[in-house]
Image (cartoon, rainbow, N blue to C red; front, top):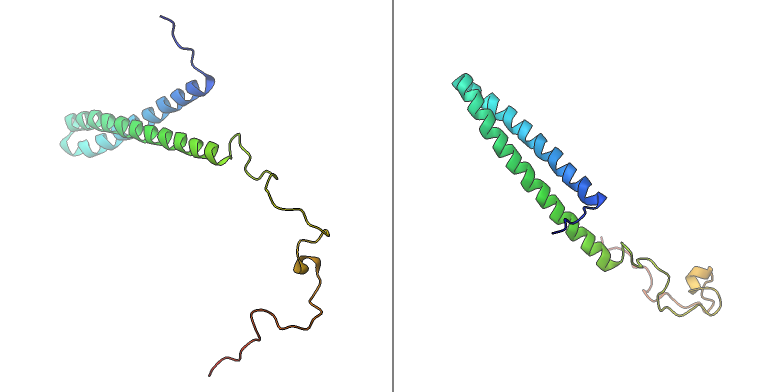
Length: 127
């Protein structure tokens, strides 16, 4: 049976998991030892062991959740075109401008007919 060669990304992810889990074990052991100190030296040892196990499990769960969220975000980014797509590409189906100005307001012109604006005249507020 051939072993599947791991990519550099897989190795970095695995290394990151090990580091985070070690941090979780260490912080859990420290917290357990502090809480177990109330029962004396045997309580410190038992608290450190139990806290280390709990910290390692919590760190592993958080890493797995972060990986799952990262994979989902990457999937969504590919779907909408952020990764390897055409997000913001100038391939929209808008018709080209006929005279180089997209609208009267954009060209700086004003209406010469003297008509009131469509929204009507400004009304005076009631008192």
